[in-house]
Amino acid sequence: MSESVQEVKGGTRWMRVRSAWQAWVEILSTRETGTAMAWTRIGVGLVTLHTMTSIYTSGVIVPLWANKDEGGIINLSDKNWLVQLLGGPSLETSEQLLLMCTVACALLVIGLGSRIAALVALQTSIALFSLHPGSGGGHDRLITNMLWLLVLVRSDVTLSLWCYVRSRRWTSSELIYAWVRYALAFQVTVMYWATGVQKMGMEWMPWGGYDAIYFAVLHPAFARFDHSWIAEVMPLVRVATAVTWIWEVTFPIVLLWLWFRRTPDRDGRLRRWVRRWNLRLIYVVIGLGMHSTVWALMDVGPFSPITCTLYLSLFHPDEYARLYQRLRGRIPRGTAES
Image (tube, rainbow, N blue to C red; front, side, top):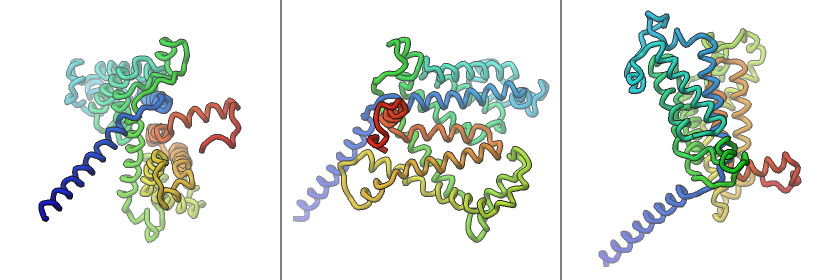
C-alpha cells in the first residue's frame, strides 16, 4: 500500500514538473509583431547616442577618458579586452571607442543591422566605462543590459530602414519572439522593487519626516540650480516621498497584472479584482511624472530617459497598433481596449 502511495506521489510530482516545463516552453515560444521592440530599440539608441555625443561635445572626454599625461584626472584602466585590442588605454583609444559606439547607436535608431549594432554599442560602452570606473553609474549598467537584450532579438523587422529596404514599407507584421520583451518588463519590475526595498533610511519613513526627496534635491552634486524654494512646499515633497517609496516596493503588481492579462481564460476573485483597473497604466503615469520631475530638478545623467524607455516593453504590440489607429481616427475611442 505504501509503495502505491509513493508511486502516485512520484507520478503527481512528475506531472507538475512536466506542466511547469511546458508552460515555460510556451512562454519562450510566444511570437508577436515587433512594434514594441522596435520602439525600445529606437529609445535605447537615442538615449545612448545622446549620452555619447554629449560627452564629446561638452569636452569632458579628456578629463574622463584620457591618461594623466594627456590631461585626464586618472590613469586609465587596461582590463577590458577591447581596450587592449585597440592598443591600450589612451585618449586615441577612447576617441575610437566613442566613434564606434556613436555610429552603432545611430544604426540602432534607424534600424539597420540592429543586432550587430547593439553588440558593438554594448561592447564599446562597456570598454569606455571600464577605462574610468567613476565615469559610469547604475544607469550605464541599465543601458548595457538593454543593449545585450537587443542583441538577442530582431528588433528591426519594423519601423526601420532595413524593413524599408526589404519591402519598400516602413512597417511590417513579421513576428518575433516575445520573451525579450518579457525580460525587459521583468527587469524594470525587479529594478524598482529592489530600489524600494533598499530605501530603509529614516528619511523615507514617517518617523523620519519623509524628508528623503528634500535632501536629494538639495544635494549639490545633483541639483541643476538653486532649490532653496523647495522648503516652501514641504507638505508636497513629503507626499511625493511617501508615494515614491510605496510605488517602488509595490511595482511587482504591474507584473502580476500583465500575467493576469495574458491568461484571461483563468478565473478567480483576485484576478477579477486586479483586472478591474488598468494598474499598469497607473504605475506608468506615476513613473513618468516622477522621472520628469527628477530630470527637471536634478542632473543624474541618462537615468530618467533610459528608465522610461523600459516602459515601452510593458505594452503589447497590438496596443501600439490600436493607438496608431485611434490617432488616425479609424476606430471610435470607446471601442478600443484599454
